[in-house]
Image 1 (tube, rainbow, N blue to C red):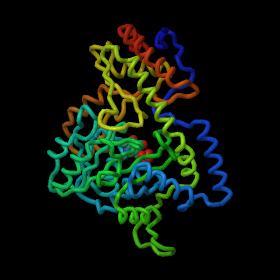
Image 2 (image 1 turned 45 degrees about the horizontal axis):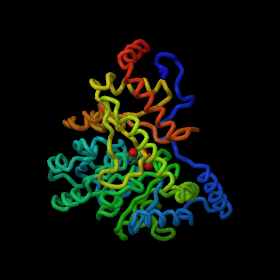
Image 3 (image 1 turned 90 degrees about the vertical axis):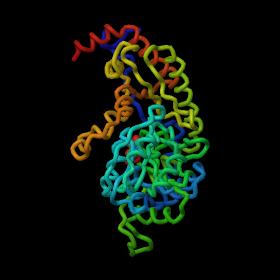
Image 4 (image 1 turned 180 degrees about the vertical axis):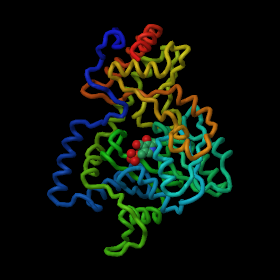
Length: 398
Ligand SMILES: Cc1ncc(COP(=O)(O)O)c(C=O)c1O
């Protein structure tokens, strides 16, 4: 297999991104039908029938009392913190998350305390979390990285013992579960992102899942400027409503989700099969502890056995138009905003994982997915086989 680092011609004609939107032809057709109906009714937002239907469907799918739709998951977290009165003190979270998990705390006046991860799951380590709980702690906020849910029963028990609230960033975890229990089922509210890169999307959007009807009522008031009845804002709300057009897009994909998950599962299986014998690669398992939606495929690169560093492999793949990513590199604790404000925590497991990890695309533009995954695995194998030369060629192009 010729490599772009030598030939200058990428394997793929167009860039293949991690998290490239998945939009099947049937979803486009369904979306047009539902959006046309919304235009016909002339109701484009403000708690329309499509948003109401989506709330019901998402709640049923996750076997939870209430699904509160919002404009995105960042606002979901902010509304939750506000509704739970979490506007001061410390929030314990992993640094291996999207920066919005920490930013939402900051916006609400909470100080994020970054904890280390469990190297097997890449999620908040319950041991480090417990160690870092002080009298100022008010909340524990794990992130279910790549849809692998954190150990919610253990965290719920810890939160109860230590008198703090538990809520979870389930941005990646639509259709996932932990031991058969989906997000929202552990007595703690959880929020999911419906961003266009996610497994289930409303273009921009999100949802809060909760079994607490009073909390759901409060969230519905807060997302609509605090209005509890016409002309009377009883709460200091914000605008976090989901439009009917966003809800139409999400509803259109619901009937095809099982097929989508099967297809992503086949991509995972192809990567696992094809990469199993490449020295220096360890695949991150996503379905050992529960159901996964297979949106993310991640592996760890051991430079000495693979022959090239993780960053070298990322660069060699980029030249092939494979835009693999080092998720959530460099970790929130190493991002400028937090470095300037917080003492840098020691997070050895996080630093080790983020120095080695990379996520590969699971959806592809104009290509048969399993064949595309096999091609990417073939490129990785070829890069390994010529790792020394690849390294030299990359250094020359710098
Ligand atoms: C783990 C995690 N949390 C939160 C978010 C924020 O979601 P949103 O873009 O819907 O605000 C994202 C991603 O985009 C994410 O990956």
